[in-house]
Image 1 (cartoon, rainbow, N blue to C red):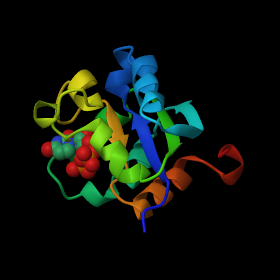
Image 2 (image 1 turned 90 degrees about the horizontal axis):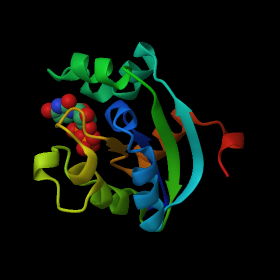
Image 3 (image 1 turned 90 degrees about the vertical axis):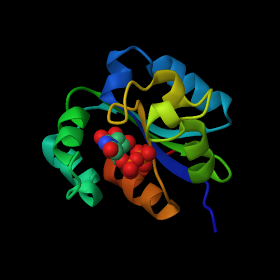
Image 4 (image 1 turned 60 degrees about the horizontal axis):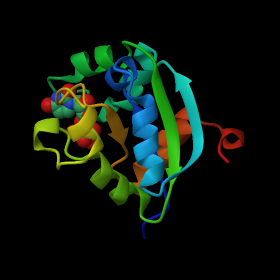
Length: 139
Ligand code: UDP
């Protein structure tokens, strides 16, 4: 059964390009409540661990370098059907394939530097949320 939480990061490209405010506005206007949020920067070790599932993929080194290149905004979002609805809101991994009006269509620059992360399952949403937040940081 779908739970009501997902995890997101506003990635270093979108932070550098000044899109934090616009992205948070789009997220809240789409009915998501922010239940945890922080402005932080991933270490190399954090990024390697977070994206461990992709460690054998050819883009892994670039992905880790990119994700550690500057600050990010990490957040846990709450809404009915959060994981699927948030994946719809962010659009396809490659912004060229993302639907009109999606966050990646609006703010991403490439398949790698694609503005936002969104968990792909309830299980990963829980793992990723607890990677970044302790129980007392979630409201
Ligand atoms: N990525 C990349 N090159 C690729 C595919 C993915 O750099 O060919 C990066 C991109 O930042 C993506 C992340 O790796 O968001 C994780 O990939 P995944 O396939 O899980 O996409 P997502 O779930 O983020 O849409």
